[in-house]
Length: 570
Image 1 (cartoon, rainbow, N blue to C red):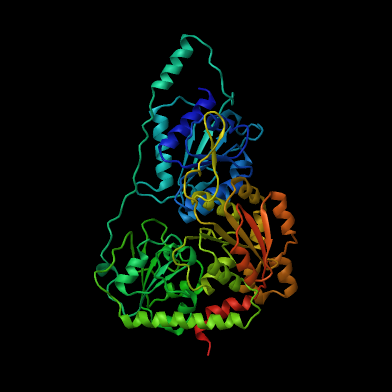
Image 2 (cartoon, helix red, strand yellow):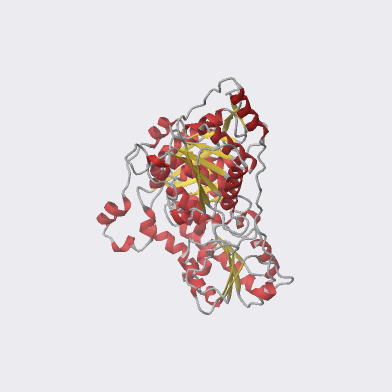
């Protein structure tokens, strides 16, 4: 069976199974997939991406918007480059297919070039690993691919996540012309007569537990929403009277009803009265939240349909896969009024705190971005997402994303490009059968412009993905909040433990970059904003396509603790 025919069969079947995007990284062993894409075997969105790590995180961004993406890479170290994205997808429970081309078995372990033991490389971080050899289109092949897609989507009873499909291609890796004759005609007829019938596997829907049976009444209850929170969180809050506290990337803000300044509230004396907390998603930003969930006098109800659920301290009273809203309020109105009043007071105190400073901090920048932009936000996983959590009053009605699965700075630009593509504000062109590019975004309404906020180290770590932003024409503003190095560590215990010199040497590691030249090198627009107020003016007048905005900020590590403890100030 020619390798290109196998690649065509795989892509055609995955197309039928709901694959939406293919990100193809160039290579020789993976070339059969390139020829298959060129021939039109896949009808969805496909594009070449030079860098495997960038492709992996672009796929993560796509998955965050509800897409089902696949990354195709060649053999050897190219597969290992996807490891950070696979870890993020695994912990964030995002469906992702890794299609790794491989050498045949006899070339492994014998010193052959670009050959290693790559099947199962991702270990426990992959939901499954499927090994395929070149083969005719068959029900067996379709069955294996159906199971791979089901595992990635968490169906019927699993947890969504990455799946590796490892394909050991043999030479020839190029399309082969069939000689005329009976044998060739017979083979063509056999392939044409096979119609793949992939099995679509639906996830199991858990019957919701009654609120009255699981949560019951409470004197002082809260709902805490982290990344991947239930879309019903706001409904629970309205029906129960439990105030809803939500991290920026929880998804809960999109429906409104969130009480802001969660960290200030749970750090205040008011938190000492809490007796019940309903947790949905993965809250990871706040140590005060973790301390609240660890208190033995607090009843903790975790709503999560998949393992591992969030219970860091082992203090959860009950885990339920789904929860129905109560039929009537189960928490007194007076409690909710006090929490909302505390949030209002926290806002006033944080206003005063920022007004007394220079106005050139990450917290002020977060407020400027939130006030001017209206579209989706992508927030760097270190200080930016914390600044929005601490200082921004409302993110209601907008999608907010952050790679908090592993909370790393890897691939943040690429993730933002993937999100822009998934939401329709980037071009992902697919070759048609004649080989001419087709703009799949044509004829569709364009999504709102995406705004990504990240620190300077995060930007430098993924600078090569600016090429991906330019290639897709993403409607994307990339704001580099430049605090000259790793400002996140200054907000942690290391800011006090290390001398200023040691801090700058081992934690700050400032990078001296000409950001205007960097933007020009990759062909993206550029702007500079010396203050958050200037940034607001720049953001109010966006150009077409991607743009890098350099926005210097002060570290001001003390402000994070002061904002968190705003309600403790005299």
